Image (cartoon, rainbow, N blue to C red; front, side):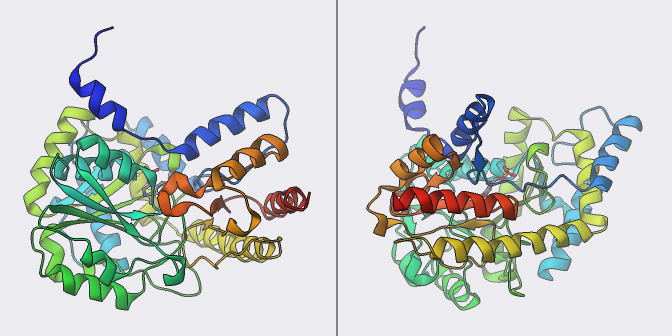
Length: 392
Ligand code: PLP
């Protein structure tokens, strides 16, 4: 086979999402008869609410089998605009909303647009691994923004702003955050936005996919609520986490006027449109009853408290209480184990799937990510197994 220069260089730089490889390995071990508890992958363990499934079936029966407009059907973009108004108080035109085949595709598009050799892109570390992977793919320089435990796993506005240079094209923010469960406080977001006013050429991608998964009565703060950066702000959001729809591959994004035409062309070249019945299901998700979402959130909250309490009772492990998302990010550095080695041995020897912190960036060393999107019974059993292993 002949290889092109692009496949040699760019494809050697592209990374992975190790949580998905761990999921494959867990499935393989389970198929060999092993009792595996999966706290690895980040997806709700609930079924998509029934009325959403019914809306997709109805759409198919009603004959919605063809291509849709590239940006998504208008009633869906209108529903997203209504939802945005309810959750943020900000009015957005459906003409700035773009329906995507998954939340991930928005980061793919934004990074493809902004990244090229010579450019710098700031991204959270530890953070969702695809940010860095895609930045490397484009040839841009990845510049990690540290997410410190000492800051309650939020970025520091001062530190973030200090990393901006005249080469910075894009700043990626993620709150509530994966893998830490950290939530940026309002004061820090305000400071960041104020500082960004001095850098009008920096585009901002705010990944708000966990915007509903917040605890202790917190209200989500969207970067949309800051008019001074609106003309260069991209919002990533979607259905995967809030409505338990990871396998439907659905997301929405909000784009400034200047970039909308570019994302439209990218979509035309790559996926044409998002599958039609899924788009009708997405309207039902937004407009229908939210009781199931509330039940899922209550279950996540119960599990959050249990997993953190149990983890803190383990020898040499400390775990901060996450404020959002469904991940616990315990500090395991006191155990003497390297994170990835521990994650591997926990899966292979005691059948507990977790993800090593370094899969989310250099600053993830010393941590494990445990997704508590699993039953209380499984969470208790998994942490007990980890405790027995660490006490050996
Ligand atoms: N952004 C963050 C921070 C995530 O954790 C995830 C999924 O885990 C995504 C985006 C991607 O979501 P989707 O499954 O809708 O592509």
